[in-house]
Amino acid sequence: MSAGLQVIKFCPTDALAHIDTPTELKNIVSRVEAVRNEVGDDIGIALDFHGRFSLAMARKVFPLLEEFNLLFIEEPVLPEFTHHFGLIARSTSTPIATGERLFSRGEYKDLLRSGIAVAQPDVSHAGGISEMRRIASMAETYDVAVAPHCAIGPIALAACLQVDFATPNFLVQEQIIGAGDPGEVLADLVDYSDLKPKDGYIELMKKPGLGIEVDEKAMRAAAVEFNKSRQPEWIQKDGSYAEW
Image 1 (tube, helix red, strand yellow):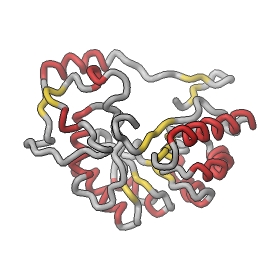
Image 2 (tube, rainbow, N blue to C red):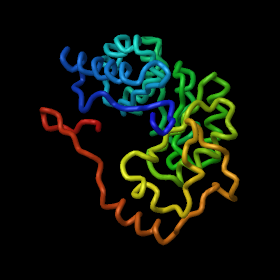
Image 3 (cartoon, rainbow, N blue to C red):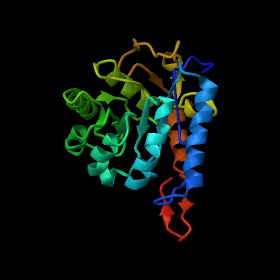
């Protein structure tokens, strides 16, 4: 908020059982309530559940979150259950978003008819700028907004922005600049000043290509370090893996 950003996104839970306890359900609601009370009504709040809900748990929890006027709820169930999104969308007035783990227009085709409000293709997953722009155009015909997924670095962000600037149904751009040490996130750029939000917005870049300058030596070094990292692993009580 101090940087002028107008939307925040977080996940109010860790691993969940297929149908979790009343205590966990109340914890989810209380965490969202605490954030809304802190930021007020001028800041948008999005929740990213990263597929941690079952269909039953999603329909149980989402009506309880409606009073907080969320911007959207992201990826409530895993992408292999995309055919359930119609039931989820009809169970709540909160806009539903998904799509970071779908890779082509073909995978979006039925989803866009389900009643979701926001499509979230990732430029590094979905075939690059051209395919993401085609997905956005498809979404426009179903009155679905686009909020490109971008949870990695500034090069992907710059590519997403090129689509955003040319997309009438663009909603908001995810980005991680400023999350943690900016030096780590932005080490592969010579000059990243054009990617810094001003009053919550990033202005159209004027430089050639993606509009950024890349330090290729630093990028190669960063790639080595990045490949050593692993996402967290969560284990259910029965020893099975849980969605992180």
